[in-house]
Image (cartoon, rainbow, N blue to C red; front, side, top):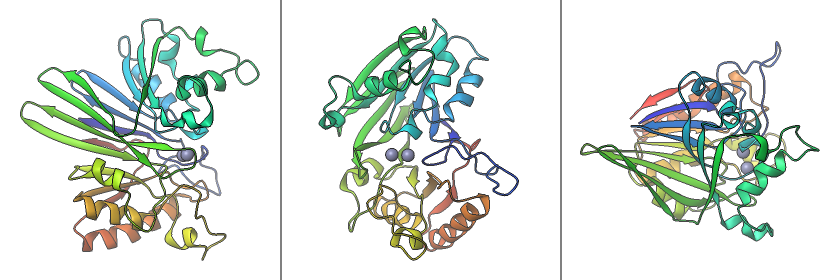
Length: 294
Ligand SMILES: [Zn+2]
Ligand SMILES: [Zn+2]
């Protein structure tokens, strides 16, 4: 599978300025694409989704399957600017979590959130007028979606992360021509005393895990500003703890804090790499434009 990162920023898009440079790691919010054989998977629709859409429009008609972690704004705000939505030849299947029903929303939470985001007070074009064929589907926790591939299968598994309002992590596993590779998407999650059993199940022996490392340990624990406990995000230190327990040898850090410029993220990456080397885990801070092939 080919994995590309279109947005790795947390909370709000953070464009680079003269005094606050973010051009190395990028300022767009969460969006990751995975091409496996003929299948295109899109994980989250943060502002990075726009650039992915522009690139896709250079090819033929777009068929894609979206898996949304949750519907916080930084994970859906790119959707109104995804050019394939405006092409009637596009065929989009959109999976979102059903457990957010606790919020009192009737029907698909994802569908409600995307349509709500484009109600006329908020945006000039409604989802119903965008033109693409859209098929909304709900996923329960620990669900497994099997997508057939030529010569194999693509499996997408869901697991619940620790985040206000709920959030799904996903394991994307390609089984093709006698080979298996797997990528775990775990953003918008907070660590607790113990590792998250649902995340451990998703991440077991995966090739790569992308993990929410929004804060430094000092920030999280309140030694640099107010404590960030209960805010739903984690640190590189806890990413290494989850990766070690799950037997994952490559950790990518994401959901970079909007208060962290390139220099701050590079320092986090450096600290994490030093600890990772002791555990035999390769660590990088994910950046916009990063491409991996598994
Ligand atoms: Zn987020
Ligand atoms: Zn969130």
